[in-house]
Amino acid sequence: MILQNDSRLRSEIRRFGCYFMDLLWHANRLKRVELDTDIIRQLYIEFVGKGWMHKDCYIKNPDSILGFFGLPVTTRKESRYYFCSPNEFEVLKYSVSLNHGTWNHFVAGDGFSHVTYDPYGVSRAVSEGMLIDKRIFRRNI
View 1: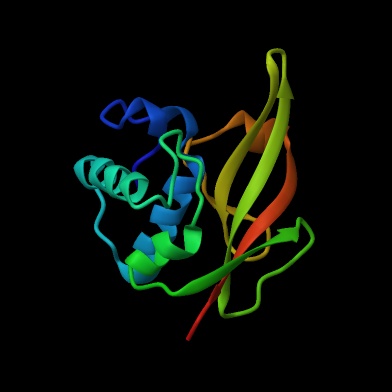
View 2: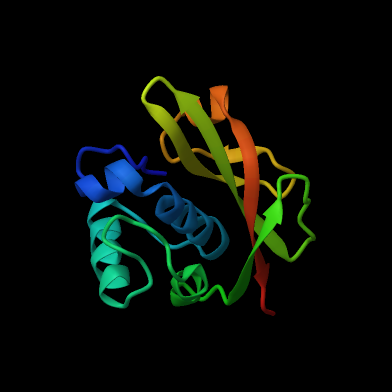
């Protein structure tokens, strides 16, 4: 999978696109959605245009983004202690305090709080930070 800091991606994705990239990773994993940097750039423009995401990659409507790929879901926020049921998947939110402030970073999880995809590769948020909470996606089957 492509990392968010790939120089071929838009600067907004490189700086703030971790949650966006996690959603794409899950779409690729669950629906075999083909992705390359050109497709990711086009999806960014489309999702911003539809109002599902801000220009700074703030995700406003993850349900619509995943639904776009044929993954109908209902999203909710849960504590870091929550474990997914078989028809759910997760995105984990980490936070780390560094010299220049506190940073949040989203990574894809396996349903049991283990990182399966870090959009930054190996982020300091995961290696030095703390799991804060989770976004849980229940598949509407």
